[in-house]
Length: 218
Image (cartoon, rainbow, N blue to C red):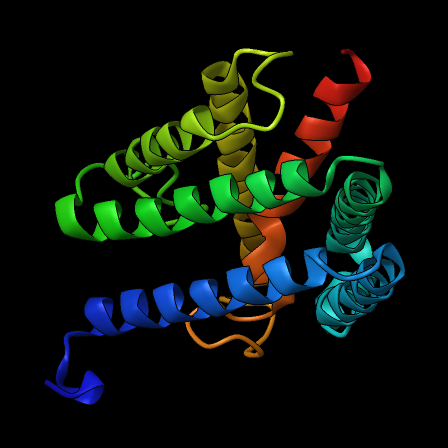
């Protein structure tokens, strides 16, 4: 069956899975490169994120302007945490683990939510996200992260995975809240099935902030 003949939800899920798999491969290739390359690409992502936010007229004035400024500070903090994880000696595998957990949660939440459906969590902020999808995504991410965690000898891997997965879900909802205030569906169309760069990394940014916070307390 051709992709164009599939139902809309199936096409969206296919696009998201393919794009996510490509991004995971790219991330793993980047992780094997020098830290400087990762830092340069992270700064490029930061610049693109700034463009996606502040190119919208409503993001540069009034209350939405302050909201977008606060959101961009979260983006900066998340990207900085990703750079710190990559540069730190011995943290390459932990960064790969973080990406795997967040991507597993995101894909699983979309697939399970589309399949089961059910009550919405925040219908006015994010009308397509359901309890079944969010809980299913967290469960799948916890299984993946719990059985493969580079710092399992220092912290309970399943509890850490739950925290990272929940932080990823929260990051997704924060971005949805900002987009709702800006009256836009996506921040861009750069990545098929996902939208802009921010639409793809929103979960990863808050998850990275959470993970770095945990590491600082260890």
